[in-house]
Amino acid sequence: MMPASSDYAVTTPAMPSPFIWTVRVYYEDTDAGGVVFYANYLKFFERARTEWLRAAGINQSQMTENHHAVFVVKSTALDYHMPARLDDELKLTVVVEKLGRASVQFVQEAWRVRKDDDGDRRELLATGRIKVGCVDLVHFRPTQIPQEVLANIQKPD
Image (cartoon, rainbow, N blue to C red):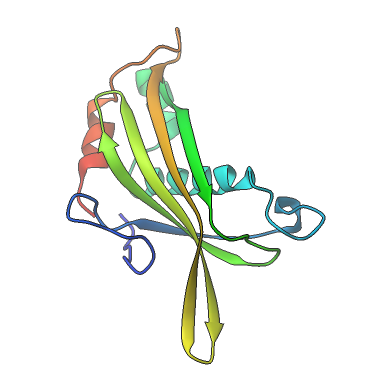
């Protein structure tokens, strides 16, 4: 996996250090006031989870072709703390909170880092809990996560 830093997300012994992905806020992500539209955090978190999968050696296209299975979002819960704005650079974190036979629950955070005279100032913008399930492509019913995918998810950082 890519090196991660615990400078952003809070970690515990039960939760490993987070995977971090950086995104820029573009005009298309904002409302008329230049503030990120609330639903776009779900898109940002989706991108970070996708990059986390890539970094873990999981190719979703191959998973689909080889196992006829895909990950789908089952549930989301987001808390908004501060607004992100046009041109902000966001650090998005991904941590596996719970791993089941057919599902993965993530804790994700969106952080803004601002440089000032005192150094970097980190601001937590949003926190999310996202549960994804593995489903078969024929019936769209839950199915076990393929063994090699599960092994890659379980690998330490």
